[in-house]
Length: 607
Ligand SMILES: Nc1ncnc2c1ncn2[C@@H]1O[C@H](COP(=O)(O)OP(=O)(O)OP(=O)(O)O)[C@@H](O)[C@H]1O
Image 1 (spheres, rainbow, N blue to C red):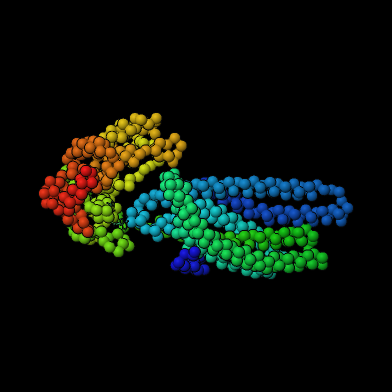
Image 2: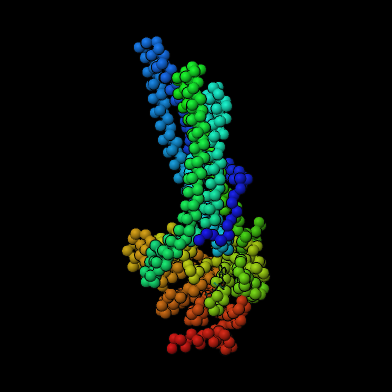
């Protein structure tokens, strides 16, 4: 199963163009830890001279041995000095190798952590709409992949600089002897390099195309093996269904990868053989020159060694160039992610937010359609939420109740029309300030596998350490009696995800979530299905307190439970994207319209 729409393969131009992401990448590395980066560079500089030094010492040693043999001399002190020096270089080289690997690893770890945080921070600034778009998720996935992949890129790029300097030293030595041998060397390894270049591009394209499938595989792994889903996976016997799908997707990817890996191995072996032939040709030539007496035995070992080292360094550089340019393509994905900007944003010069709300909210001819949706949710919606009013919204599944909340909190902006607060378009206020002034508990509220304290403090996370505030919020939402029963009180970890965690029932979670609403002293409180999981007594008590605690404040209640809805001062009924009815419970009942019909339907169900 291959992805349907094959994405364009990155061209040579794309790959060179992607190299422009290397300087900002290095800037990032430098900013991660300037001293470690500088130290790493310095150590590599010293390391790059060592191969030349070792080879040259080798030449001196052999020439000295030959001289001693020919002169029948037993004065080996110079020879021993030279051997001692080479030993010193070998020890230094090993030490430098380890030190640079250590610095690479430490820098890589620091950088991976830093970029994970950057990704999380940037993701938090983006629109909800972007999170609901699969294309965005693919981008996020590619950026995430980078946090690990770039550790290798860092080591490769640094090794590249080191090898280039090594080549400079060796090349200088060889040029003196025979410049055209270097030319042969370069020409002979070029085919292998071009092969690598080509296959790396293919491999990037494959990985790019399969991003959605890789996400699906992650998802299947999660569904099949997470504690949240375990009971349903078992009872519905979903394991086979999930593993079959996993097998199907993963084997598709494996087959594609295998094909590429095999072609790569075949061509790689063939093209490398050309390079090896070039090397042995040059080796033979140097051997013949030695026999003719044009060069010494020591020079033979030096040249052959330099040649071998040059070949492997050049191969290293050229091959590494292809993986670096591939890494740079991934960097492009990483930096592109940071170029994504939210559309819902604060204006440049926001209006001061009202210290006390005077009039309330007005929906004025509001129409809304989700991006990429074929049909709108609302057309020309008009209603008000007055200062101090408790307003309930009633409507069938999918009528758009939660969407209204998203518009009111500017998670989305209306497609047409506007929403006013005290006569001013919401878009004219600072976004953060608007959102801070509204307390919302969504139907699918977040359940953090963290302490009860953290879960309650979600309502105003900056005050997580203010214990009395958290405790009061817990008392107000009826969560306090639940917390008393925990062995660790507010420090009890909730959920079964981590050791020592306690799982809660649906209603217990809801009481914790409700406490969040009381953490923040907002003038508008929105509760989306706040009592769906509560038993009748808890629902009654919650609303008793709710009415007291929110006196004089605005509240928006969304519920399918009419026992909850009737507590509101006013109720609006939404149907087919329009406002159908509006009034108090008594008025709407007397109207005998849709509200009265739904109310009676539910009441009958309970008889
Ligand atoms: N992110 C989204 N992208 C596209 N369409 C969406 C999105 N979220 C919701 N919708 C669609 O918008 C419509 C309104 O959804 P919404 O969640 O507001 O309904 P609701 O009245 O709260 O429903 P319920 O009573 O079931 O909670 C539905 O048809 C839904 O399919």
